[in-house]
Image (tube, rainbow, N blue to C red):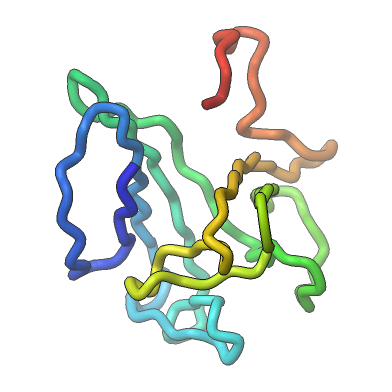
Length: 157
């Protein structure tokens, strides 16, 4: 699938073909629309520091057009996906988060292409990543992306 940068004014040019998959990630801010980056450089918050909510639709291009694959996903709290992070919080009902395991054939160390968006391992060897989205509720955790008893028995790939 093509890499589609998720920001306004990007210069990416390509033709979508059947089988390509991409996301549209609108951001709904409760403050200003301008992003500000924290000192660590990776966490984006609204400029005035008020909460924001992001939702995502994953789209699959097929022979008949575009199909929506996922629904609205809240992103709070922001849980860093790396070992040794300094985030401290208590999960509460209503929090939604992802677990995103990754397998790398070589190094885990990463770098970015000159587009500033595409992340790859420094040695350029293949990697695979998937995720599950979990929702904390009053009785525990619900895996929102788990297969249902009625789900088709087909591979994930």
